[in-house]
Amino acid sequence: MAPSGACWILLLCGCLLPPGVQGQEFPLRVEPRDPVLRAGASLLVNCSTDCPDSDLITLETLLSKELVGQGQGWVAFLLSGASDDSQVLCSGYCNGSQMTSTSHITVYEFPDSVELAPLPPWQPVGEDLTLRCRVVGGQPRARLSVLLLRGEEELSRQPALGEPVEVTATVQADRSDHGANFSCVTELDLRPLGLELFKNVSAPRQLRTFVLPLTPPSLAVFPLLEVGTSWPVVCHLSGLFPAFAAQVRLALGDQMLNPQVTRDGDALNATAIVTERSGHEGAREVVCSVTLAGRSREARKNVTVYSFLGPFLNLSEPIATEGSSVTVTCTAGARVQLVLDGVRAAAPGQPVHLQLNATERDDGRSFSCGATLQVDGHVVHRNRSARLRVLSRGVERKDDPRPALRGSRQPGPPAEVFARGLQARGAGRRPVPRPVKLQWHVSLPGGQPAGHGHPGRGDGRSRYELLDRQHRPRSAGHPGPGGRCSGLPVHLRGAETERKLPGEAARPLAAPPVHAARGRGWRTAVLSRGQKSAGPSAVYPRVPYQ
Image 1 (cartoon, rainbow, N blue to C red):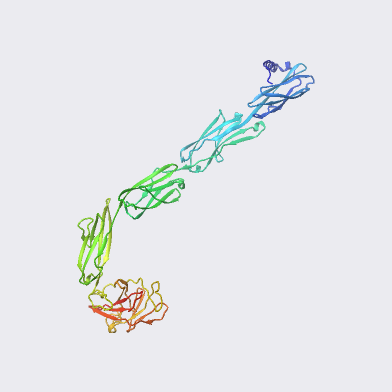
Image 2: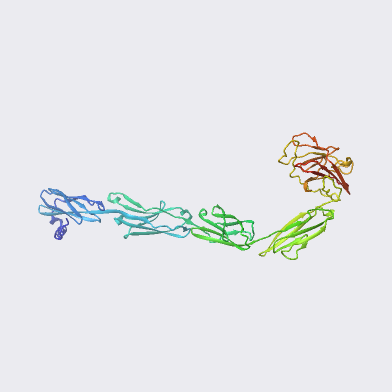
């Protein structure tokens, strides 16, 4: 029970009396002395004296009290409801003189909450970051401090003032702060009061810092894009931090591209293959956007999509007979300017023609058609070529309607040789499914060995041409002495004709019909295998003479 106003006045007057007037020969004790009590806790307080003639010992306080015991020279009360610091007063009489004693109760309380304000999602490197901490509750405030930490590093220490407590600290964000944890800590130091140091820590918050250069990314793309073709697009940006967190978007108009992104330190490279399949010609825009921390840097470039058809080069008779008429035609799409062997088309988009009577000089003649297209100030070039073959009017075999090939009058560079697709079939064997080498032993009529020039002179400049059933060259070569050409062993001797498969002994073939034709400076021998086979049907050894 709280003391009455009159009692408080009496006690106060008694306390103000000089010691001699009080006559306290036997002191009055209060136990515990200056206690430290957690808010809301109870405290047992004992008032006692050694005076043999003590009387009216009591305790006065603003707290709730309950008498729990008393006796000669002492009294005990249970105090409760402490929320703030307070005083207790014990009083009594000894031999008619008043006795008093006081004690200070210190109440402490841990903070109800310690919270660090949320950090920005991304903090630019080099800019100031303000940390804010809010503390609710906690006492005694004189012994309560608020700290702001980066990891274990103390950034700020301030006293707790006001209710609630709000403290701030400003730091400059650095790259090293990326991923660092920041927290707020309160320290209640009760060590001078006989207790310990109590800490309360807020939930940590992680900081993410970034660097995004002001310059846009560099975008490399070819300014022209032909419909149906593919070209690489490369986007590069350096000075990013952290580069791994950056996102790249590449697009051609409304078409999103799928870039392959690589990162090297603070640099980022994105490469994509762009293909225009819509068939729509005209201007398109390629966009590269690099996004980091919700901010973007963007680069744009225009490309022109165009269609280039042709040129298409056609010979009315790719293999013509000497004296026949041959028409060479070159065509292309709209807006394409054509030039065929120096002859220019009348207008862009128009075809161009050449007509000639085939002569032996036209054998092997190459025709070239050049096409140009103007696209957005650029000139696109394209060429096609075709070769004409001219056959002579020589004597033809009855069982082989193909005419002999007319060679050059003058010994010149050896003709091209194609030795692809060569196969052989042995007696009772399935066709070999891959090219094999054949060994032929051939002699020309009149006993003149192939591979030699004029009788008695071995010049080694003989030319061999291997044709399929459509008179298309399959192989040719220029054997030196010994007669090897392009991997096809060729020997001319006697009047024998043999075939040799890999790993087998040479076996005679049925004697094939042999026909020889000759002209100025050349002689031709035709060797036919005389049966259907997977291999070539004729060999034409050409022997130039000087």
